[in-house]
Length: 327
Image 1 (cartoon, rainbow, N blue to C red):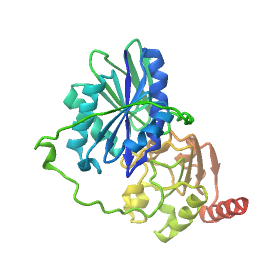
Image 2 (cartoon, rainbow, N blue to C red):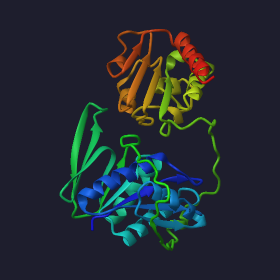
Image 3 (cartoon, rainbow, N blue to C red):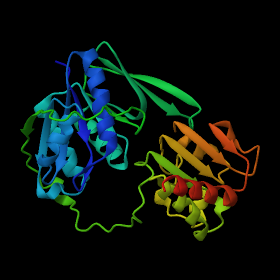
């Protein structure tokens, strides 16, 4: 049986939405491969998440629980996932394309001598082989690769490329706890403390809506209107590299090839001209709205809707109208 295993990424008991999206993809691929979609969740006290994971389509859930796994530590998570792979014997492992996912996938692939593709935007099956598509050359080209079924196939998949299935109330899955023994090598690194720098606004990779600002905002204070609009849309705040380099926003909010690649349902670019690196980081968004006074700005070539107007005029008007509609 050609089963597919989805790594469920969670932080403090909260599952990353991209994990649910991959369960839907795994279920679709499994029907072509004659297998089933299974899941793996790693952490401390994560057994309580199994019902939720089952409701999104996992037929079997593997858990690895240990106090040392409360926070991501590369060597220990790699050992944990490798142990699940030994127990589950999947043909394919799918992992969300996040900072954790990129690191974990590459380490696990090296340890298991697996075929690996990072940041895939499309996945299909040809026989028992995985066909993956990736964006290359700053989004100018789409390249397809075949991962051989002769070895384990591991792929990380970009968020929001696939839609998650609706959760099924009452769905159940077989649960198997996997015991792991960490070596002294695994224990060389430990997480002593986590200091949050979050402002309470969603990370750009997690929002269905992203409102981004460019250097035209002129200052950190200028970004207040971006935050106000994002709050009305329950979205995340992003920024161009120029805005981050100028100190208007932290680099954790930078969208682009040298920042974070995002694919939200709605991307609003405010005062961003559209350098090629930025376009490559957001052009996969479902709907793109550009607000810029420069009618010939490159951002308009990828925008669904373009507004040639001063952002300081339009953005507050949008925020006010949304506030009025919400009563």
